[in-house]
Image (cartoon, rainbow, N blue to C red; front, side, top):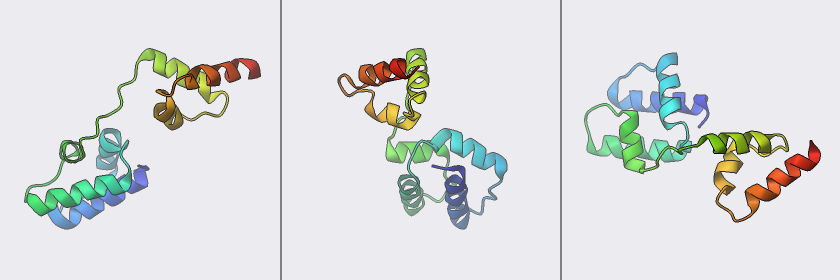
Length: 114
């Protein structure tokens, strides 16, 4: 999600729990659940308020959607940096890194352009 979408998510939640979203809450939520798609996060918020009367927290969104935060190794960061040189974004790297041969062929392309 973009931060503007995180803000929209918190404003939506405010309609149910009277929270007062601010810049810090948007930053914190963006760090914790920003990897989710907006619609998925909003669906989780809606599900929470259909069943709960207490305010929702980022952990609630994650447990409702059961979407783990991607765990990255140092080598992931190095490879992603190499691929950025040829226009491969981090999101695409995360999505395609498991495809057989994809990383190697993209890294070879990065080397030939260097």
